[in-house]
Image (cartoon, rainbow, N blue to C red; front, side):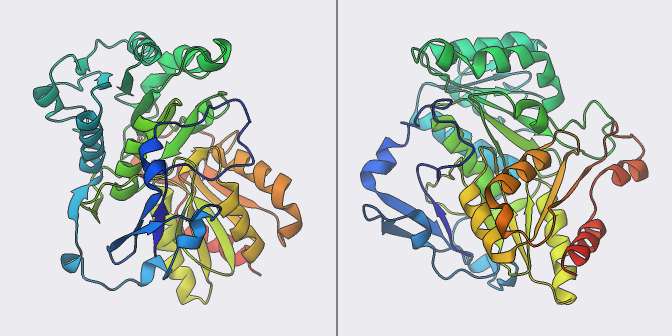
Length: 400
């Protein structure tokens, strides 16, 4: 499948006109008017975007993502684990822009709790890779202040659950200062860290905070799911003039993929077509992408042809890609690890209903985690999260 990465994301119906200011950091890419297309076989090609054309016109040779048979050893590029891809993207941006800096607990000489910042303190020094005390509210506020003065800080929460201690800074300052200052301040900050249900990490370390942050005006949210989009989203988030929260899943850090040697970025506002199909649209993100693809193999064997979309942009939603899929399949299944009450799935259901209700032939179904604290016991933990068998059952019922 060919994927197009371009400088500015497609417009979203959920994007308020004045809540996020234009992203100026991609000007170098805009001047070149060139896009890098990376196909499923790993080849890349530069294409010139003609004035007035849309990015989807550049997509060529699209095939089902699960049908590629090319040997990985014959592909160009290099293999990286997801946490290494995040580090590579971060390091490239620190080389490119001296204003980029990192702060958080143990991000310095220890290299971060999941080694995303390993080696950066030695290379860039303690001022650009700053170890902080265990004081999330304080160092998040320091990062926001640094962004106001012209730096581009990346704040790492050792665990996303810990960022609840910085919720006041993120909501009242990070998201609103551009507006409340009358545009005098920009807040080009990236807040990132691991979250999600791991393996017996307990309730407090298994938080999914997407639903907490989605209601904050002025903040963009993205979730990475592969080494490729982890690096591309990291680079795009650092270059953005808006505050961006990058959600990483604790169970995906050791996922390996071959990525291009050439520089690339991913749009912060575009979904990814993982598997084209005809019968039903399955919308998902982060770790659940792999549960969905596991279920898709079973569904194909049963004669179904699901279309799988990794929404990636949690705020704003890419309603262009989602809408085109709904108009084709007329059925929607949402699969998320977020909580059912007030989760991303609930917001996505509302957006699809408001914009594409007339194209639906069946009610939207949303599979979410149960509204309970995540148990420590492994078997009980599995029961709280959506499993591939549940996805297969839901698709069969929707397609009857």
